[in-house]
Image (cartoon, rainbow, N blue to C red):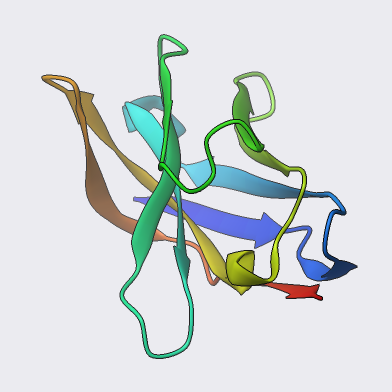
Amino acid sequence: QVQLVESGGGLVQAGGSLRLSCAASGSTFSINAMGWYRQAPGKQRDLVAFISSGGFTNYGTSVKGRFGISRDNAKNTVYLQMNSLKPEDTAVYYCNAGRYTSGRYYPGGSWGQGTQVTVSS
């Protein structure tokens, strides 16, 4: 079992930056890849970015070039650096422990509680 705790959300003006953190505990040796998702009110939860255990990263089209995902294996922590934020980035952001295989990220059953990101125009 893996436990995930997100932090770093908040209110920021358009064009600003935030860095989200996701600390993993428990059976962290079993983590193959980590992903960040977001969910806006009334919308589905979408994959924003993921990083594999080998450091491969991929991003959703709407955040490519603005967001960066990284991981500190010693701290069992994954980060999401969000730059040039837009009002449409407003959502609850969740981290997930999943698997990266065959060129695709598959979410696992471990989710954090979410952290709210609000971008004002």
